[in-house]
Length: 600
Image (cartoon, rainbow, N blue to C red):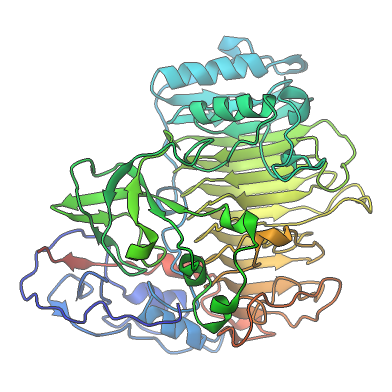
């Protein structure tokens, strides 16, 4: 952010206890990721403790990462060197090394209990409606406390939504090229008209809902009931009403990047529990200013008339508790923002989350219908994770859909080896309504097979609604753009992506800025030379554009939302092939932290 803070100031402690080993120290992994030379011993400091050497031997004060030498095959940007000295508090680049399901784990959990959908009546003949049978199998796994629901090779017709509403349930096909769910009906037909809370004839199926829908059962039931009653259902973690939560404890002030917070009352906190950190804005909108990086530009911005943006606060960040020691609570991820008393910081409850569930190894193919005019989608949508945490989709293709993969109030989820194909879609990927710490990796947006109508619109990899610390990595986008859909998303990363940048961004004016602070585009190959929403050094405050192709402005030219110096950075412009590390997320995963917490 705009201010640098040193959590070591005023430290009066000389005795420490070895606690909370989160991995090795920040060491040779950073050098190797950057293509550097031989590793040197390195260390970093945990924001609430001392730094520890690479083998946990001794205490090190104030020592930064030792860098390797640049190789002839690539250049290490100054920004990366700076980042490794302050990985949790860098002013332009966010720390996203723990994004994704189980902090980005390479393997997803599998459950020994296996249920075959054929035993519940599903048939791979392409004509029998197998949705009831598949949903019966999923419900049986849920009642049993979890399980793997298998779908063998073949084409299974579905005339209803496939719903995963219980934790620890995995829907697994035989592979995206072998198992197909053939969807014949839209969400408008199945559930009803999902109108916009802002009136008019807009269809909210244009940015919500999936024909394979992972959401807690209670959340699903309340959402469907609201739609059928023609009432707008709030799509966040706390259900239809923002007052359906209770305070667990108040939280003392803390700095962005801290892993540990002090609470007023730890009695209802348990290790492993999922809680929400809730930050309310104040009348001066200092929370929104903080998300934008602070300083004269955000202070001068007119926030009050951005009614859609202000509806997204309070900011609610789901996180698991790693440890409770007295009033000191260690979190599984570092704080995304400062915690200040004027924002009434609390840890609160939420609707029961969906966790440990996933969909794997299948294709969702919608009956081929023409793409509707912009914002009138019928809801032939693919896979959506909503109010989900530590959930995933792996090896999944969606075809001929209005919208491909969605993350709605979803956090710490992974979409891996996913593909959007067929006649063309409105949102190939959307990430909205307060979704945080998600990872989308090894993804493909294929070129459309049917020319788009002039009254339709193509976005791309979308993020909006104060969503933060999400990552898009290793992508092949043959169409679309880097769609920041207003709503001031902040601290997101797009890295190691090839894009034919032919889409457009969206977003209502009342949703406010396109970008908040610490947005990073790193190693982006732009095959058609279009700058829009990829080269962001003139748009995003306190952000970074590193290693992208030479591009020019055409078709859509945006102006910054904030006045004055944006404090943005541009490095290795025109040389994406030269940047090291090539993948910012992978390099950050190579940074791990050993720390010793000190207790009062």
